[in-house]
Image 1 (spheres, rainbow, N blue to C red):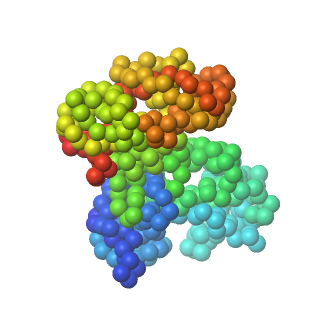
Image 2 (tube, rainbow, N blue to C red; image 1 turned 90 degrees about the vertical axis):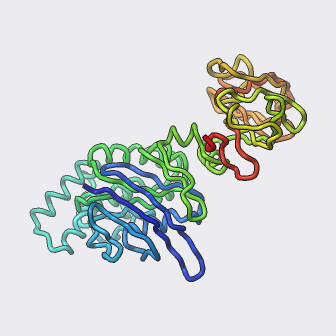
Image 3 (cartoon, one colour; image 1 turned 180 degrees about the vertical axis):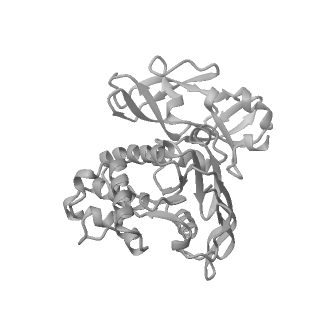
Length: 365
């Protein structure tokens, strides 16, 4: 079993604290994605699991073993790097088998493992090529194959798709998902791209400034962000945040516009409380051009500042109570800048956050 457990793990560089005593349990065969902005500590955390960085405090377990003092080669993990780390003078076959050769494995075993990895990743026809003769996506598959041949307890991925173009990133996301379905092992994957996190993960770990902000399934984190940071980091386009206050059972916006307090949140706010109203672009739609019919809603007449047609939908930039927001129009209707339209706010899906702490009011439950 290859559970990975982090208990009060810290990393300091002198007086600089990079990771602040994080706790995390990763189940056997689980695909966990560490996501967050640059400098949040996600890659440092991955490197501590791999043994490439010494931990300053706490404990890391892989399976039943405490691995704090074990070198990387004794942790039975494989790591896939951002820059592929292939040997340019070796063929694909030689790259795949090199780690096993260094470990003193026999030629027959190496050949079998290489053939197995090549079959899984569709590399059989490329085995005699060098990295210079491969595309970026093919090189990344070779890097993953080199990890597979070792039959590790866990795969660690450090932003493996960041060097690829948008189309190829989409294709490689699917390849990595298929790989996990075929080779059922524990995966810890680091990215700053929340789309990668949403599409790949069994669970997402959202990090900021060396702390874990939230852990949950992609849908849990998307639908129930614990604070404004998670709300705006997860989701593309990000959640809209509009300053407001609670008065008379209403959410009063800065221009005096009043919308109902969503019924599921009514018991978590108090009269006079300063709040932030959160609405995703999908929940601000022109009447008759949205998806579905919310049970609780408010209609506002808004002026279109910019419209970006995207084919079957358009992204609309407008303002609510002086605050820039993004909305969605579904369908192919052409919208002109300056046009006024009635937009429906789906309050069923609205969020309220405490202004002082940024925490969701639901966190008080």
